[in-house]
Amino acid sequence: MSLEGLSINFATIKQGGSFGKLVDACLAHGITTISPWRDQIHAVGLDEAARIVAQNGIGLSGHCRGGFFPAIDEKGRKAAIEDNKRAVDEAAAMKADCLVLVVGGLPAGSKDMKGARQMVEDGMAALLPYARKAGVPLAIEPLHPFYAADRACFNTLRQSLDLCDRLGEGTGVAIDVYHVWWDPELEQQVARAGRNGQILAHHICDWLVPTKDPLNDRGMMGDGVIDLKGFRTMIEKAGFLGPQEVEIFSNNWNAQPVDQVLSTVVQRYQTVCRA
Image (cartoon, rainbow, N blue to C red):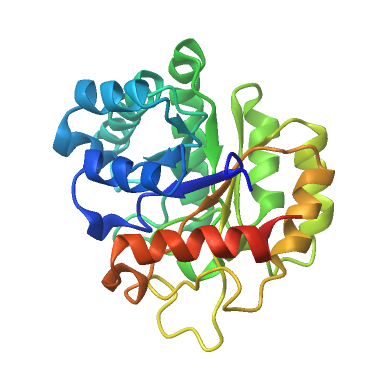
């Protein structure tokens, strides 16, 4: 069975060593699409990472990550924009489908959620002309409300798509099942995103019951309560036929050998994820 529709986010196999070793491990399992993290690329160097990708015919379903726009002062907000420009440059060099944005939460000491959301919008508006020129779409990833204070003050697809509509061309969403599966407006908002060509990435894993740690206890597909086949059907009905990117932050899975993790990913992708 073809694995063209499968991508591996390198958070899932971060225990496997260097960028080159992670690519080799994916190729050994027939996986040719990845989503790396900036620190992994920085460790090997952008030129070398781009060479490895090009030499092996690797595609990038996304580049992780930009965002974190809110800051306590103007200096911090400007620094965030400059760092995001560097992330855009990296995504362009690696020919990534998009730059995934975890937009940021409350600045230190703040309780002003409305103000934080405005900082996100202002930051993206400042970054967007640069990203458009580089040909890098910006994908807002709405995160579960658990993360609203410290990681992402945009928590639903509706919020994120409303922001995309205000900002215009070159923006969209990364739809991660872990963060939005519970949303009562999910089907409506996925369809809306599809109509407007705003689905830029699709991340998969599972929600365990119980979840011991919402940050590092994500489940392997099929081990939790998310209807992954139904979710994928919904995504494809909306017009997105791109890769399913496996992104599993998990102390459990990160303690397993990379070959075991990837073998399990492939098996679960083929049996519980495909529409």
